Image (cartoon, rainbow, N blue to C red; front, side, top):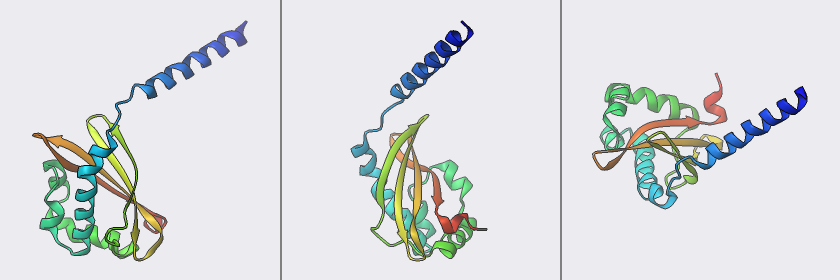
Amino acid sequence: MNTKIKTLAVTGLLIVLILSFGCAPKVDVEEARSYGDPMTENLLVAMNESNYTKFSKDLDSAMETALPESVFPDLISQINGRVGNYVAGSKEFQEAYMTEQYINIVYKAQFTEEPEGVTVRVVFVKVDGEMKISGLWFDSPKLKEK
């Protein structure tokens, strides 16, 4: 009898998990890419050019505060210093998903010194009716090295 209760509990939990994933907000991929692709390309090319004005043009205020111009050279050094420069136009869309009010878009991008490619995740949020960049993450084998 105890085994039946455990089996029912596990089955019930699995059903709840499956249903909760089905209820997650869906992202309109076409719409997300219509702003995400050009904004991400601009961001990556601006890093190659060490151009903070170009880099920051689509950032939300929280991101501008977290990444002011004074730390921009450090970001470039951390990324480009390990994986090289972004190969313009090389990013490939991987997925888009929602977390709370944020839309996450993930790309695989080529950098000159990273044969494995770099995963670039850009987080967007709507601010006063406009999409803005609210987060930026890079991941690759070379970036994980100490």
